[in-house]
Image 1 (cartoon, each protein chain N blue to C red):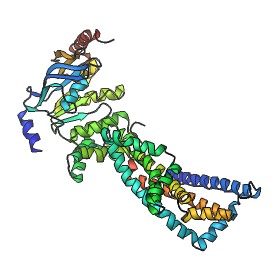
Image 2 (image 1 turned 90 degrees about the horizontal axis):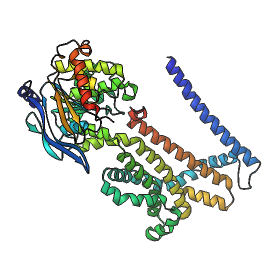
Image 3 (image 1 turned 180 degrees about the vertical axis):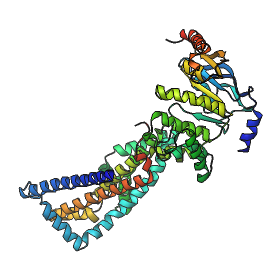
Image 4 (image 1 turned 60 degrees about the vertical axis):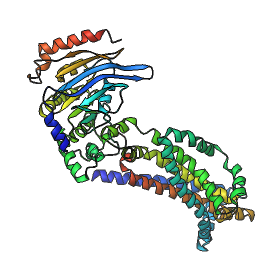
Length: 264
Length: 262
C-alpha cells in the first residue's frame, strides 16, 4: 500500500502516467500493431478510438501486461511493464464476474488475490459497493443483476484495489443506451474526484468526445495513431450541456470525417 | 409466508410425482408378474417378500459387504486419480496428448472382453474386481474433468491474472469452481458405471456378494430372490447418486443458482 501512495505523489498532473513506445504486435501473419507510440497524461482520461480491428483492445491488454508486445515497451510511472501489476486495474467489456460468487466476493476478488484478510477486504468491498450505488445487493449473485449493475460490480472491483491506472475495455458497450449515458456522466465525476489515470477503449465517437481529455484515433492496416485530439472547453461545462456545445459537435464531425473511409 | 407455502407445495408435488411414478412402475411389474409374461418373472410383491426374508436372515448384508468392497475402493481410486489426472490433462496440452487417447480407448473398449486378460494378470481376487470398477468409472471422470477444465472461461482466467492471481489462485479460485458442474456430472456417470463394473465382475470373475445371489438363485430357479437382489442394487445406486448431488450442492451452491450469462 505504501508504494501506491508514494507513486501517486510522484505523478504530477500533465506528465505521462503511462507511456507506450514503439509497440508492435503480430499474431503470426497478422499485424495488429506497428510501431505505435502514445503517452497517457496523469490524472486524465484518454480514449482509444478507432474502427474495429485497429488494435485498441490489443494495446490496452499489452499495457495491462496480459499480452506481450512483439517489440517495444510500456512504462507505468517510469517502471517498465513486464506483466500485470498493482498499479493497473482492468474493467472488462463482458464484466468477467465469477458467477458462483456474490457481489461482495466479486468486488473483493482483486484484494483476495492479493492475499488480504477476509474481514479487511470485505470492509473495503462494502465501501466501493456503496460508491457505485449497489448498496443492498452485497449478497446477490451476478445472474440476479441487470447488465448495468453487473458492470458497476466490475467497476467497483477495479476501484477496490486502488490502482493509479484504470484500464477500461469498452466498458459500456454491453449495457443499454440509457444506462450508458448515466455511466458516462458518472465516469466524468469519477475522473474529477479520483486522482487516477483512465485509459478508455471505445468504438463510439460521441462517447469518446463526451468523456475524454484526450482522444487517440487509431487506424488499421497497419495500426497506428493517426491523430490526437484534445477537447479544450468541454471539461468546464455542466455534464448536461456538453452534447450541445459547438466544440463537441465539431470534434464528432471531424473524427467521423477521418474515420469514414476506413469503415466498410 | 406465501412463497414458503408455495415452496412447500412444490416440494410436496415433486414428492407426490415420485411416489406416483413408483406406483405406476411397480404396479405394472405386479400385473406383468400375474399375467405372467414369463415363467421366470415373479410379481413385485413376491420379489419384495424375498427381499424382506433376505434382510431378516441377514444374507443380503453379508453379500453387500463383499460387493461394496471392490466398488467403494474402485470408486474412491477413480474419483481421486481421475479428477487429478483430468485437471492435469485439461491444463497441459502435452499431458492431453499423452493421456487422453488412453481414456478414450478405455471408454470405448468392451469391458467384458478385457476381463479374461485382467484375470490372467491379477487373478480372481479383489484386485481384478477393483480394476474392473476403475476401468468402468475412471474414463468418464477423467474426460469430464479435463473437458470442464479446458473450457473454463478464458475471460475469467484473464481477469484473475490481471488482478495479480498466481497460477495456483487461478486453478483453485477460477478454473475448478467453473468446472465443478461438469466434474460432478462426471462423478455421477462414473459412479453408475462403477456399479455396473462391480456387478459385472461378480458375474464374470468369481460369483461373490450380490452377483452370487443373482447367479445362484437363477440356477435354482429362485427368481424371486434374483429379482430382489437386482432391485436392491438399483435402489442402492440411486441413493448413491442422490448423495453425490447433495455433496455438490453444499460445496458449490453458487453454481446451482445459475450463470451470469443466463
